[in-house]
Image (tube, rainbow, N blue to C red; front, side):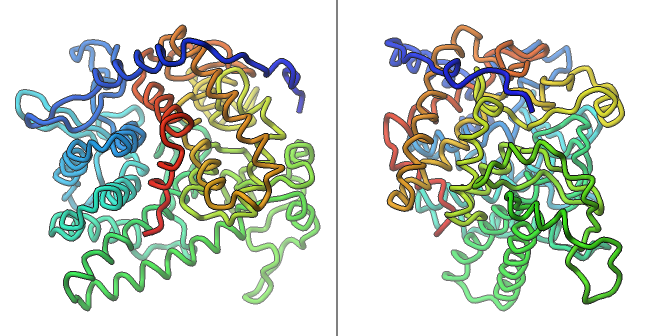
Length: 481
């Protein structure tokens, strides 16, 4: 793959306006908070959004968009707002037969009535799977940080957990421990050929199951229940099987790719399983050689029979570090890969959502000629400032726990984070806190990007908090009890 610009071009000077920018960003953030039933309970998706009469939903409270919002509020000690948000989501958990247990993609209060969207109003009419998987993670982070164990063991929370587990752990025609979803079912909400078992959903499932276990353990300590004990055993086993599956089939390094290229194909029988998904060597893209270098590693985007998706997805890989799915050596291999490919993944506006983008006939066939997902735009290789905090938190958490293991690697990775932070600080205010950026280097504001996007603003504030205010606060995101 061509390198769009040199390392020297990536250098950027710090700004003397840091505190002023942070103050303005905090003011914007406070304006995003909205009241539900008379109390603050979340942030709208964007400050500048069309009138509601135009039926555009950026004025609604999205569960997905509120993940960084809730994390930031926890770091500020504003626990009541987080609890209100979790409670509203719990009240809106679907009870209808087909979607029983699903949490809403978004909600809003209108004339005293809560209106939720489970996909029936979205483009493509797809239910957001990630919204449901995020709720237990946020709930456990809240309980862990606030020590509100009564909330965790309450009947409402425990019922919500069981309904969700019934939904994701039910028997199906599929024998693997992954959760199968259609296109558009998570942050990548336009057709991008990500159907099946996309990385982000599977990593979120891992984090969801870990968090559900912690929440059930809190209830178990307060009351004995044979049903709860059995559900804990089942969930822990599923969690173990899911991690083993993802590390076996999704984790790639230069060494594993070489082995994959030489594995036999057309294997039949129960005991011959060197190449379980019948992957032909011709589907392994040539750009992987430079991408992986010698010591890099990452989790690929998807594994389907004969069709692995070798694209790099930033959020799934970052969350795999934060949730403890990747081991410490694997996390360092991922950091090496990002450092080696920083000109692609960070660019002028960190960081790219996936790489490489689909172009030409592949773009036309697999996206349906989607004009929003034009190559190097939106979810097809666009740059999203809101993604930097997840990768930054993964690096800082690793540095906190394994500082002495590879200081030679961590020093330049921390320096890269600093540079990315300054890049956002210098550009985001001028670009009105845009939702995403286009082009091979992420220089241009996205062609359909909203301005004053909430998770752009709060993502920057999270990076500032973790780099400047309290680096030790990153331990909040550790899913360990």
